[in-house]
Length: 187
Length: 187
Image (cartoon, rainbow over all chains, first blue to last red; front, side, top):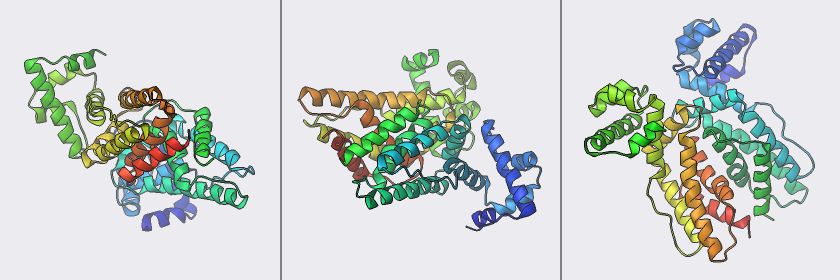
């Protein structure tokens, strides 16, 4: 996508503008703003609204882009503890800690509300899928019996996000239990 | 809650008014209305806005009440096929069929967006928890080894709702696979 490409190749001034826009979106979502519009974001970021209209097709596209960046913590490394149980426990614990932070919860819910069509949601899942695949590959290389990547997404990632989205309490203890369950499936 | 109590004790005229309000909310959410307000609902339902202000603390409280009623299909019976595998497969299949209907998807997402505080989300989970508990009780009475109710919620219900909320494709095949997985945990 042209918009995403533009966003991922920030130069000097452009990079500062983009940071201001991302921050403004984060602040507005974090404040629980009812109506997040291009003019509202532009005003908060101190940029001309035209900048936004030019770069993103609509406000949801921008919201999704910021959400994915926030929710998947782009660039985070996948744990490498020497066992799948160790890797998954550390990974799921980090997800649980991260997505239960109040500003993440608001982001997640704002993203879910953004629109019925896919895009960002898929990218969040895609990022988690790649991380899980890496851990499974290493486990299989060590000769461990591993669940499939889909099983890890369904039985570890989905229950954690489900709890956050439905405002149920969740913590690292849940993450550990979910990892034990998914490993028990292939025992 | 007083509002919920009032809503669950409908009389003649009051019952017709309530039905009109629920229908109006359903239509507006189903149409993907940007702004669902008391005045908009009142206009669509043909009732005085005061009726709404008097009965519900705010529009989210009403939205949540309608959503819970729609999403859990109050009064639906729990399958009783003679085996836990059969019960869970039928139950999960029905959930998958139901929550992937476009109007349910819109409802679910509207509900998630409604507010960070709990209430309705918990009631949805509560209804599913009670249904799962009934199937587990019967399985244990027959001497079957059953997963816990929490495991059924985490590993069957959560992945289905997760897929819908994040706009990922899902179907009864997924539901069957999830049931096989959760039963494999306790094999």
